[in-house]
Image 1 (cartoon, one colour):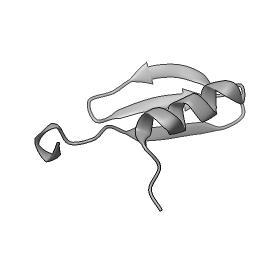
Image 2 (spheres, rainbow, N blue to C red):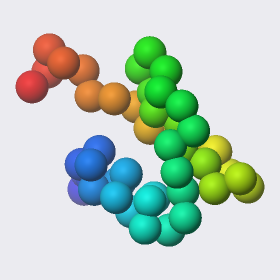
Image 3 (cartoon, rainbow, N blue to C red):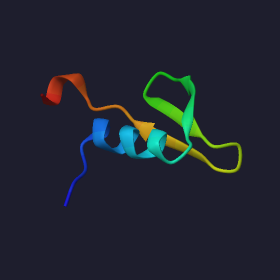
Length: 46
């Protein structure tokens, strides 16, 4: 089972996480206790 990136981000934001920063290949979400990198999809794969 795979989860779409946008669904995962929505879940994080609904549960108190916010975007800390955007990197080259990852977006970093945190809730000041945990930090979670979310990998961006490869543009050539779509």
